[in-house]
Image 1 (cartoon, rainbow, N blue to C red):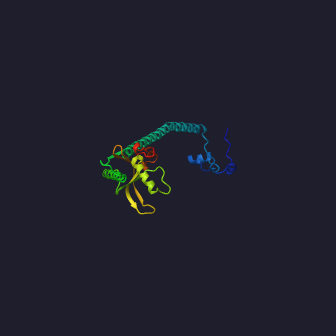
Image 2: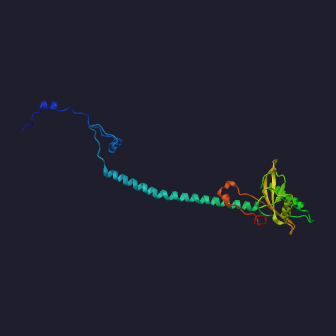
Image 3: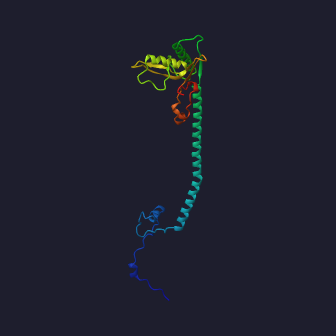
Amino acid sequence: MDDPAPDPAGDRDRPPPGPPPTPLGPMATLCVWLGLWTPPPGTVVKRVPVHQLVAIVTGTLVLFGGALAVVIPRIKESKQAGVQRRNRAGADLVARERLRLRVDQRLHVGALASTPAAERELVAGLERAITADGRARLRHRTLDGPLRATTCRPHRRAPAPTGPSPATAAVSLRLAVQGAGFDCVLLTTSAPGRPRPAVGGYPFRARIDLAHRRYEWCKVSPALAEGGAASELARVDLPPVCDLDR
């Protein structure tokens, strides 16, 4: 059987053959899948590989979960190690500061003159003893100079609102000499002023022990401010002899 002859009219009606459609690249295909871009007509777009995407997402989640399982415990261990290091550093600071305060505030004792002396002479001897102690501390660089002299006043738990009268001052001096104690300042600066000059220096607490014929004094040392809360924990009480408020 012979093949049908070609139809010249039908060949004229067919559109001329065009170039083959160009496949999209990976990024363009992904944009089409996500609905971010519409390709021109005739563009070949691959179908969404659902099973492959599910496998990829599942594998990614598994890998991510495994990484978290390894990383999170290490982060917690690192944080705990940091907290422990800070706690040890704070404890070391507190221990060092407490030791410094105990040494700086320890009780000092000096002998009274062998012959009886008036009350003001006893106080002057106490002031000279504290000044000598301050100069020894200056040589050992445990305090800064310059040092001038020491002044001592009878200790009061609450200052008198209008100032003591001469009679009251004499009684306060007598009680202080008999054991009530003194608030002393080893002066480093002094500036004139009214009603009284402004002074600066190192505070001391002191007693005159007539029964044992000796002076007793302690330097009052605040904790270093640079340690923050650790320095607050490092506070050390004065020796009982120098705790005049007890």
